[in-house]
Image (cartoon, rainbow, N blue to C red):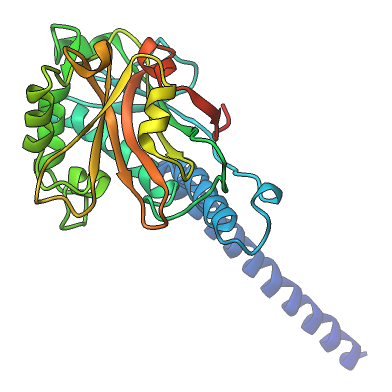
Length: 297
């Protein structure tokens, strides 16, 4: 009888240890989940998923058409008071001053550039005709409270691009403008626009905007521009650019027009529309003549 009792007790001891271990694992998992939700890593994960699908499609291991891009548009709302009535369940970026608004926009542009391969990956394949394939990385809304920061209701793009040219990306010895365009400062862009009687223009905070980029199939950028209604391309003359830079200008064929975005030559021979901010569903956006949208709503 004593031997049987000892076996029973031993089994009981093992079961208790297992239960204690299970409780510890569950508690640890709950703590990890808590920090994940607190850190809001969901969007980063979606961007990584998109980035990985871009890398896979551009690897040429499989036919491009057989590898779908798994990329979604991010919906963000820039707010001074932490509220946002314009969009259902957006990612709210709380900002207290002009630089913080600029930083929120700059980070969306930098993320967009990274997600789609930084101008180093052909993720759409070869085409016989000049077409622009667009990606709507983010749709940006501005809460009414942002009017306290910009009483005019507009963000001056000249001031914003000067911020991009003088502010480093977090944890990098590289400015946003250098990362996105390959320019050390924005003066060359300003000078090119001025020479052609054009201007940077404004971002209307009372309307939604896209953070959009794209890639042009391996045909002349000029041919693509000619195919677009009401746009022109202007070469930026500067010795400081690591790669050639071209400006896309809307309205009036460049003279008296306004800045839309920049085009650079990528490593693989493709031309890329670097991430830029354009009013959603506007004449400027429509003038790009996007062949298709590479992101899901």
